[in-house]
Length: 411
Image 1 (cartoon, rainbow, N blue to C red):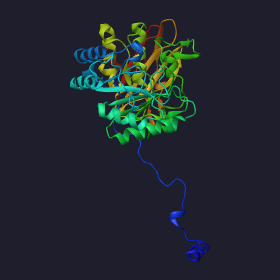
Image 2: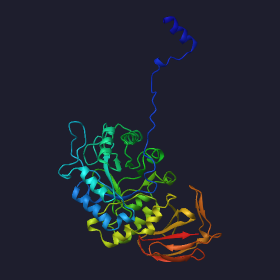
Image 3: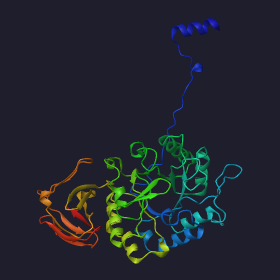
Image 4: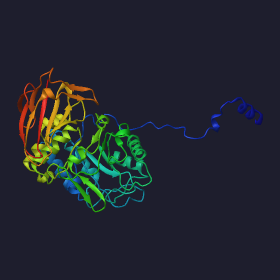
């Protein structure tokens, strides 16, 4: 045997039994095709933080259906941080808080499903969630099987208490765990954009946050005592540069849950909603449906704006130009149409006099263009739901502070 081994080694023959190292390549990744348009729904965090229970979930589901929100496309109810007990059980399993959910989480999920809606839960890649509940680190495959058994449809996965691990590996692990568990679950990466998830997230998740938490204001920074900040919606819109090329069907840049209906003016709510639609962001409401004003509901269910967000082309809009404090944002749509939003960033009313022929659009990331010298477009005002002329003439309008005018240009 020694002579044979020496002969084989001298001849350069490889003996597989002596091979060492990594020989297994795991090819799993996310469930594909679950979010071909930006997901729409509701999340508990912005209004309720950890003050959640089964009564809130059921009432929200009921109102989502009865108000027309579900018919408008909102179909996910996502429970954020605080749904579980402070400790796992003796087998390491997560326990839904028995005080908040006395009927059990499965019963709550079944109720949401019975309304024709989908259900999501929250956890975190670290040892604890952001609010101090059990995190998933070290329990990824066990937790994924738990979620699959419950029958959830969406997992929001946060990034608190993650010292010593890398984001790409942590999110890959959970993505693979969800796939192994065998239930199609939309995977939402809530990594805050610190590790550029848009560069590696497409095979891992269906959407990824691009910023820290949102705050209900137009353009502010809210500094927390713990030395971190939340951001006004326009701060988030302009926080990341050159990432729109990474976003598209089934892999979305997520600009965070919406603050429509939470403390801002109705005008600012309109602008917030319009910009989320222009940016092809997931439309996840964050207000209390039980106290929702008619004007808030009207904004959230505007079919024309939702159609811009849900356009099958799936391209994120971009800032095209700015004139006298009025920004012009554009978004290519399917069938050669364009969405155009005029946004007054100033504190005073402005007059718009926009010459289309001097402002032909070129989208260098995706190769779309609109030459208004060669082609005439019909204009639809999407908020007023009526025609507003064509691109043969300048577009003129008055626009108050922080307001938007959103148009659709149809060739």
